Figure 1 (cartoon, helix red, strand yellow):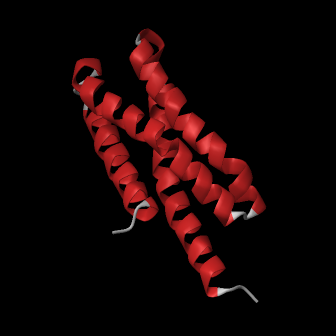
Figure 2: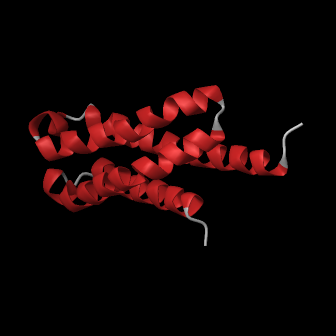
Length: 120
């Protein structure tokens, strides 16, 4: 039987991972865009997004909520910085709706992860 604390950690892990799914889709879109092949800053964004997700994968697969949360907190600043960079450079990269919506989706997912990692 799980303790209430471990159930809360598992719920938090699932909630964060739901947001990571959105980050994955943005990362995939950016990685496969022609613009990423031509712009080093944009390429660094999709690499940093992947780095965050890659760090969490083993703990997620093992069902180790405590390690997952520790790694998410440790890697969060890099995720936040990559998001801020993308939002900053997106208008220069492309004004296409796909790029604008990717920025909006990424900001929203990262904001939700921040709220989950740092409840008030």
